[in-house]
Length: 78
Image (cartoon, rainbow, N blue to C red; front, side):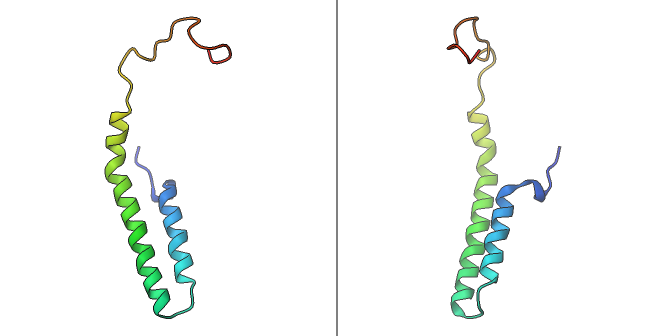
């Protein structure tokens, strides 16, 4: 299933950050903050995109480890 940009909360946060930077009064500080904001948002999205698959692969539990013996969990967790 392919997700849309609306399903990615990181892009939403990036959009809010850029919108806030755009709402500043026109001037050299706004231009600097806008460029820094766009750079930070793009960097964050790209780094997360490149590393998420690797993190998921490393976090996989080997087959059979999910099997839990009866009574081996603390009371209330089983």
